[in-house]
Amino acid sequence: MTALGCRIPTTEDAAAAPGVGTFAAAAEDAGAGALWVADHVVLARDVSSRYPYADDGRLRVDPATPWYEALIACAWAAAHTTTATVGTAVLVLPQRHPVEVAKQAATIDALSGGRLLLGVGTGWMREEFEALGWPYEDRGRRLDEGIEVLRSCWTGEPEPFEGETLRVPAGITCYPTPARPGGVPIYVGGMTGRAIRRAAALGDGWLALANLDEADPATLGAALERVHAARPAGRPPLRTVLRLVGTIAEDDLARHLPLLRDLAAAGFDEIAVDPPWPDLDAGRRVLDAVATAIA
Image (spheres, one colour):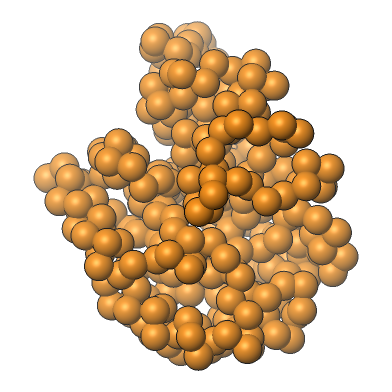
């Protein structure tokens, strides 16, 4: 059975009113078991970097639009719900220090009773890295090392670490620890061959992303087979989430539901969709219809 996930808006005026908490509660009430938020720290006014999930490579967001911080939004969503997991899809870990992220994530997980999922990725906007003072070229290596540092910090007594891009000294502690003994589950996001191999090798899950209007069940199913085949022997099974980018309008459900059924049949453990927020009633109806279709 494929579970239902949903995007919670953290941009534009709707993120403040009706608000992230209102959307989270409505989505949980409609049957969404996972609530996902997107991540950007800053937006550049002039972007030459290509956004990978649009035909023309453009991120169609006004750079003056409020974009609420992802982990704080997760904490707010968790405070307005009781059972749904909250997660980042995806947090650009290489433009943050992983020790700080470990602290933030452990705090949310501990206070929410173990309901945080940490989706991480390399990021795509060079201009954002430059603004934050992080090099763009080594972001893949920094992601790999950052995942190792996160897990070490979540023991409360991190081991000293000396990598190519990151260093953690000996003799520090990092409490609280997450609610779950194994730490916060890490989902590696991305569709490239390198991202798939990274998810299989380092992740607790794989967070696939596809444009709703371009999603092809055969292509995504083949990627799903590759990530499972690349999973090292003896590791726990990889949980897989497909995050579909693009709003499902209520009057367009008939066109999208057959595709969603086919994507569920491909074998994803969860499909996360964009309901037609900020209309709460329409959002609930769309989530209900999608839940029935993918189940």
